Image: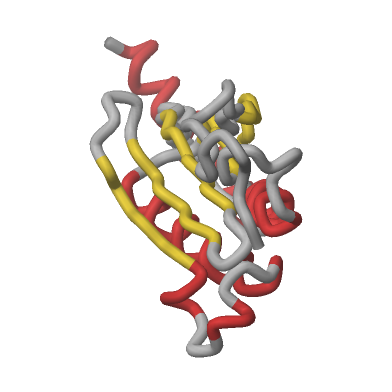
Length: 159
């Protein structure tokens, strides 16, 4: 009992000395728990006339959708990289609200195109700058395999 009182008095004296010296009392610091990492899938479809972004969760449920046409009024600008960056900002805000921190990116161009347009690159770069962890980027452009029969018959198309 006497030892406990002596310990309490020592703590009180130490607190007074710290107060005189301007040292803050020891506080219990709450450790921040690391934020749980949530994943999402960003589907980017680029054509000659537009860029369509669709953000889904891992089950495939759509969280947000944005297109170049929602960001600009002019038809000629819908597929430009600048407008695609504005669309990606909208996607980024919605993803933050949903708690998504990491993205799998799937890029698709029109069937038969050799590569996606530059707006897809601008979207990925913009989301990387916004703090999203890009896990993988895969191109899923479809390739034509013969296709339907060409018109014209036996003697060909006559012009």
